[in-house]
Length: 164
Ligand SMILES: [Cu+2]
Image (cartoon, rainbow, N blue to C red; front, side):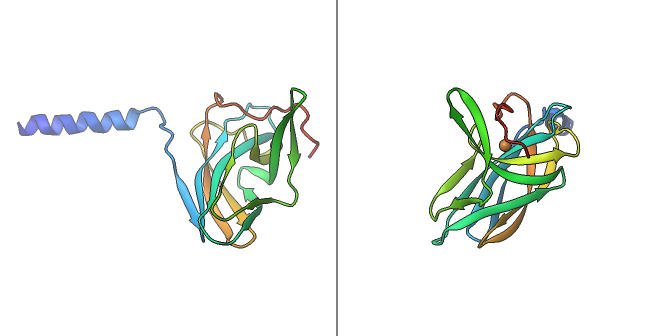
C-alpha cells in the first residue's frame, strides 16, 4: 500500500510539472487599488510595440488616476485607447492618464484601453513574465508582472496607429 501511495504522488507531481503553461490569475494591490491579472500578448518578431492589459479596481472613497508606467521589456509605456470608427480600429494616447473613479473597475483589454509597450527590447514570448510598474496619482507606484499569453487573443490592430 505504501509503495502504491508514493507512486501515485510521483505521477501527480510529474503531471503538474508537464502541464502546459496554465494561465493563472494574479493580483496586486496598492492603497485601495486592486490590480487584476496583468497580461500582455505575445508579439511577432518584427513588432516594435506590444499591448498590456489588466483590471484596476478602486475600492476606496477617493478618485485616482493612472498617469503612467514603465517596463523592463520596452523603452516606455504609454496609455492608449482603441476605438472603432468607420470600421477602422484606431488608437490614441491618453496623455493625461485615465481616471479610476471610486467603487469602479477599469478594464484594460484588447480593443479598448491598453498599455502600449513602445520600442520592445525583445519579442514578447508566451509564458514570459515581464516586470512593469504602474504610477497612480494618489496611490503611488506599484510593481507588477505582465504574463505573456498566446497570440490567440484579439489585439489592437496596427491600422491607424498614431506615430509614437
Ligand atoms: Cu496602442
